[in-house]
Image 1 (cartoon, helix red, strand yellow):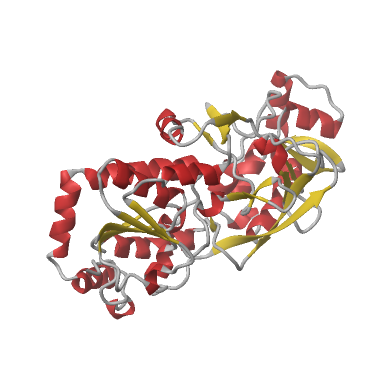
Image 2 (cartoon, helix red, strand yellow):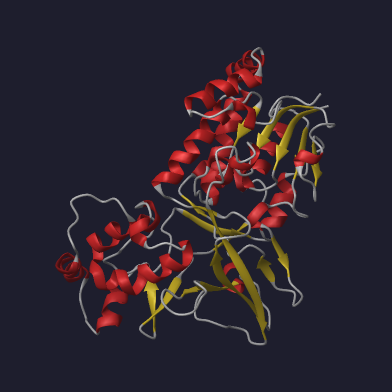
Length: 404
């Protein structure tokens, strides 16, 4: 008998599993369809012996001391501040846009104070900021929007910035100084021996069992457990009863080159040229010394593993329907990017997982879960589905209850 069945061995599932096992003394089974732990942060040594990130570069950064201290139990760190260049008008320029970016592109010698005035002179005023296009043109004007944002966004999302929520481009700041760091968080570092080693230590506990290469649906009916931690796509959990939530995916093309260095920094963006959005070189991230170097090209695509929830109002409305179902599904806790249909950074997923564990571990949460079970699950689903004007028969009978 397991106390918890955890679906997914990425950050969300692993953090909660570790806390449940080590702090609460619970027996936990983690199930993952992939053949490894670590989710999208999984890294491994390639054929050349270079440590690479299988699902694209993952750079850790956070302002949360609690999150950093928690992960520090399972890894030492290598201090690393990520820097990104963009190829624009045939030149390497810093991203996010800063003083050097503008001076290089336009052959100017502005100071920080002058750059602030320059931005104001080219910005297009927007009374209301609704879209990603509004965010950028209201700050830096139409020309820089075209050079840096429009083409990149179209490749990344398959949509024009005018069709996307303001949150997409709001993530990328504009600076009037020469700070060329991509992130400015208090804690910026990489796991010294890689993410996979960190996850291995996190999950190394006698109360934790791991089952890989397995879809949880194939085993949940005969493995006895109390409650579920679900970190997969929320629409898949409910059999896409309201329709599929849209995601963007990525295709990765890896190359190893017989040279110590391939490009001038960890990541180079290509906003307007080529089908790929960026190239990342792993040795910058890991600090590994090697005579060769491995890189990865990222090609955004519509199909494939779900990576990025598409931030549009209609998608948010669709998610609300699934969220209503999740709220009344007894004995299941929905955690992480896919389960909550929100683009989280790694530290945000860790923070969310720690918060959910704290809630689970309180007496109120335990009592609340027991109270929920006194009502028939299908009855509760009917309430949510009626609210959304849909039939509850689309939800699989018994999903989310104990299989014992």
